[in-house]
Image 1 (cartoon, rainbow, N blue to C red):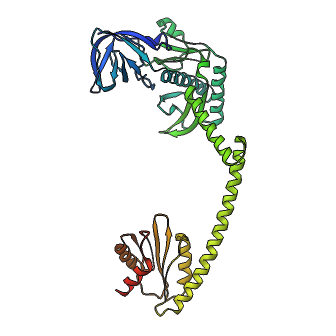
Image 2 (cartoon, rainbow, N blue to C red; image 1 turned 45 degrees about the vertical axis):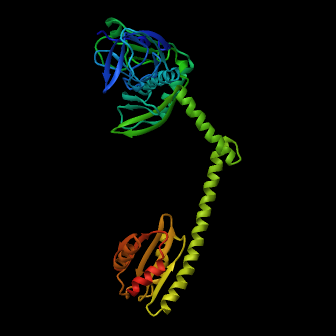
Image 3 (cartoon, one colour; image 1 turned 180 degrees about the vertical axis):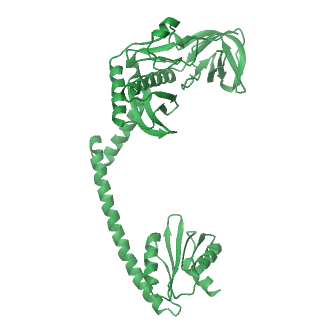
Length: 398
């Protein structure tokens, strides 16, 4: 059986076609339809497969085997009669996204090679994220920005893009960015005067169709530098979404979109000041509670202070406990309601005989919480509805 004629090689804008069913196959356990020719791009080279309809059925996947046969997997495992003439239709929106992303990847890879001295070792065009991995551990952000600017300048120039199968002599004379991965039927994509690369994917026919290329981030990944980018309709949609978020923030801050950073910085300063004031207030409250509990412990025959200090947090409990246990014979049994439960703490002065860690383990077991610690200090967390004073009193009396 001969290889499938791939119509997108000659015309990436061809979306509707007719073909003849020449057989059935299987792809990862799913039945597939084989055609004499197809405009559907099969997943390969880091580019995702096309979607659309074939013979009235939705395409679920498109892959190619080692013999060059393109397998069309239909939704529900449907098959079409061998010998039948069928009509295929490629999803235009998905194809246009892929064309722009793949063309943008070629252009950005070339620019990174020339300006950032970083050759592409792999690329991936995903459903939501596109990446280029280069042969360097780090990249200069300034050089990456210059690379992005060069790509968009070539886009603005509306340079022609040519996809063709050169003769061996022509191939030898071309300034390829990378070596071909196959040895025959080598297809080359030439993008203006910027880039010439072997590639079997779908690409735009002029650079203006790419629209724009955006670098979204640079990170280190498995010993190499990874550039995340976007292009074409996807990049435009992302920009619109981001602009919408900025406009919403502007309305929330009652300012224009360009003034949002200033409004956020003002809010950050105000929040810092409020947190500082809240910390001071909590500190004063803690000091007052500590003084009152320390006095109560001093007057208690057993020198014990049992209390729930709501919404003060663990750090404040430690501060209060330290004040109470300045009395050597004192023991502090403290709790504070926090997110997710009741933070509890037991701490003793150096003359107290209570084993704080052992006591808290008993309390945690009784209340179905957790906790433990040393003889002189222990901390834990109990359910929010635990009655700490009653629990402590019962355990002390048992």
